[in-house]
Image (cartoon, rainbow, N blue to C red):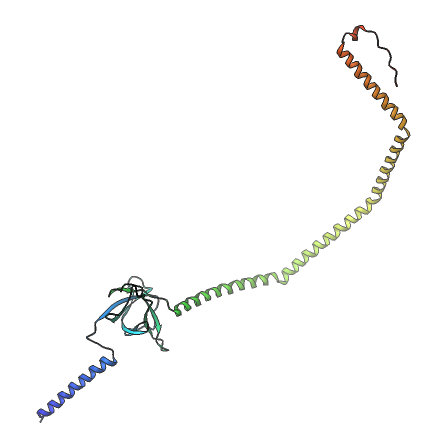
Length: 270
């Protein structure tokens, strides 16, 4: 039979066990039923792989809460809405940003709240904390950009190589060499033709120059031999010109002399 003392011992054992379990859950599980919590939302662009419900939330490295829900945004499937709960009084500011960080080498992620300025107002419970960009995010973006540029450079290099290959094609080079040989031969033929033309006309040109020199010499001799006669002729022409000028002036002054006056006396030539 079960005695009264046995029942008391069983009850005390059960009470002690429950109390111990409650203490273990409160201390090691972080469950504080009496603690007030504040809820916030974070909207991430793209995947949040590695982040799970129950993940820790830190503020500048200090644990302040946990992740309570993860869901794809109903308005935009490219975005993910993460809900968190933090201890009441946690200084979440309006300029605070939420960043995903790796928790060790397991691949799991946590939420780290950063960059809240002291003068910024508090963010009310239920508000949305903007997502920030971590160093890993920047490195990933830069790596993507470098990969795109590398692909573009490789494409250009392939195109340049194709152009060089086309230019160094033996068949095309043979054609270029043939064209160069034909052009050189044409220049050589033209040079020979011009040289032959000059040789053929060299004697005729010399004869023409000699004839012109002889004609000039003869003209100079004629002028030299008849210098006196030419001087007298020029003097007569000047005197005749003066006589015509005097006659014209006299007729202009007395036109009637053209009809009534006798013939003027002969002038003596000088």
